[in-house]
Image 1 (cartoon, rainbow, N blue to C red):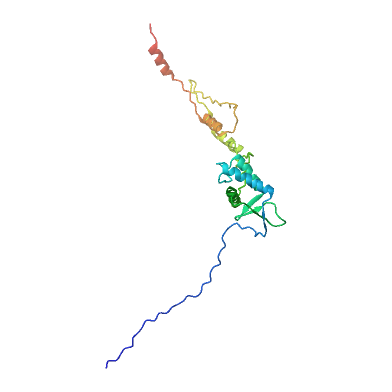
Image 2: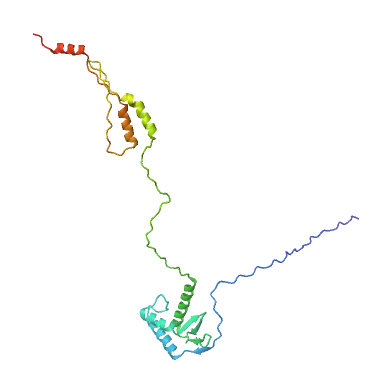
Amino acid sequence: MASRRPVLRPVVVEVQPDAVPASPATPLKSVRFAPTHGSSRPLSTVEAWSVYNFELHARSCPTCYRPRVSRLCDTGYALSEDVACHIFSRDGHVYAVQKDGAGLVRVEIPHAYSQLRHLLRSTERALRKHTHTTVSAPTTTDYTRVYPISSTRRTYQPDMLIEPASSDQTRRRKHRSRYSTVVPSDGRETLSVTPMPIASTERRGTLYEREAQRRKENARIEVREPEVNDLERRYRRHSIWL
């Protein structure tokens, strides 16, 4: 007899992960009001006439039909303000403006007043939208004149060249030999002419004036006359002999 081998059957093992703690649910952002604990009462005489006048006008006026706060005629807007002085809507319920003690009082509105209910819901939405929007502060313009002030100040210095007196005197002494003017003449005499200093009307000490004065002082002037033989030749050439 052949030996039987054991038959292996698959076994399904379910592995369950550890329980993960659930994160706390964040509450939905909504405008909430304090719970009201008030009784319901019928409309007073003044409140009844106020809602009746608006309902009658809204049914006959095409502008105020299915009214909105932003779309009303002059008469409808005045009647809606009168209604707002007596009743208002909150979370689908109609309350009286005049409180009974410390709590709000609900009022009963006839079911046939559909135009009045449209007005109350529109007013409630407008008030909620107004509370959500942040009012920005008005910008103020300052007309004070402001002059720009530079951080660095420019200093103006005169263009002057200051030299010690000793060096100026030594230079003049060295260059005095160049001031002589040699004039050869028949007598072979040499005359030394020393130029006189010229008084300057401009301000002294400037570099330009000193440079011009040095050029004049360094210039060497030589005056030469023609020799005697040259004069005789020219005289004979242009003369008439008789």
